[in-house]
Image (cartoon, rainbow, N blue to C red):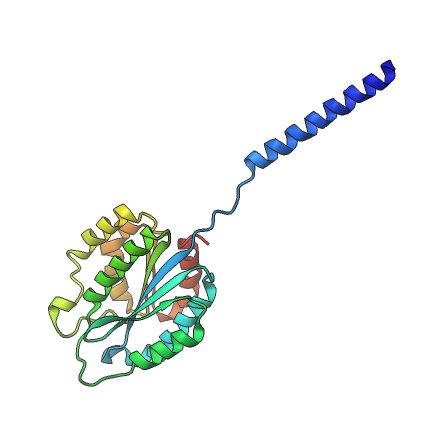
Length: 222
């Protein structure tokens, strides 16, 4: 009888020890905290950017293929005006292609680039999507040339403060600028680098966009 009690006691003690180890392991286990992203694309279809537009649209779709089905995207077309041409899943390749083919065709009567208006729209969408629980990001694809009406262009003196204000409500926001000349990208770095930081501001001319994509995926937490 005593022998059985001793064996039972040992079994109970070992069981308690094993349970304690399992519990400690579960407490220290870090679960992958996935947050869906909302990526706002700004695509330049103006005359000065037409030469690279086909390649840029192809790269945009390549980026979408790297996103999760739970993510959301919006595409803003930039020429003389800035307007939304697509919103929905990044996996809807057919819908994205149709929208871009329909609304990024060269129009000789459209003169100018409304980058300023486009980025204002993008920031507004970022705040809306942040309220919906998404991690917001903006990707600007184009040469960043200022053309046409000055009131529609980027005001680089006020943009940093505007980004700073958005960051108060969406601290994880990231931005990427692709395909512009290095001189333009250097100016972006100077204006926005101190606000967004190294990990949340991604810049690349056309020669290094593939590497920039990997950095951007990390910037949105993947």
